[in-house]
Length: 194
Image 1 (tube, helix red, strand yellow):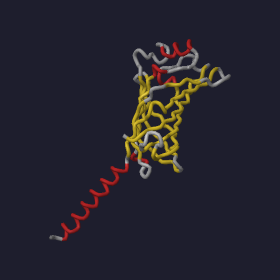
Image 2 (tube, helix red, strand yellow):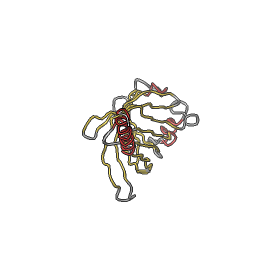
Image 3 (cartoon, one colour):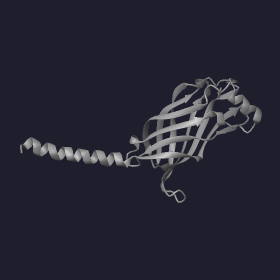
Image 4 (tube, one colour):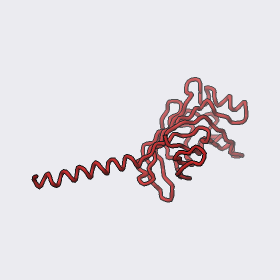
């Protein structure tokens, strides 16, 4: 066996081993819509910060605690579920002046990179799409817990995340600037290993 082969074979074996090991470290989780909430808040004429919530959220989280940059997130938000807890406003939000849910029933978030910020914190960069308009946002996320879930008996992760975006970027700009342009979005989720 030549010197080159003696060096190359062990290197290939080692590379294959580490490639397999690193792929296995990324776990795929499905978000549980029953334990996932999305809440948006905005400034109302400077007097208050009303909220609306959305339900039936679905998505996937590929997470590797030892190599956070290998993680990925995809979330689907049925905008038609929006609830402001004020019937007239909920109806208005679903109409053509705002989300126009008959044409655009779903908003999505898809990560482009994940950056560790230390101590279970990470910034999730990605694309938020509302009304077929896509803009970059950064979700500031915190890993609440990772481990065996006592009820579902599966490996699980739990995250909280927040971001702020301008609603005018998505043609949701009615009453801006009297009613604030900045919208704070908060997500809390449990996701279970597939």
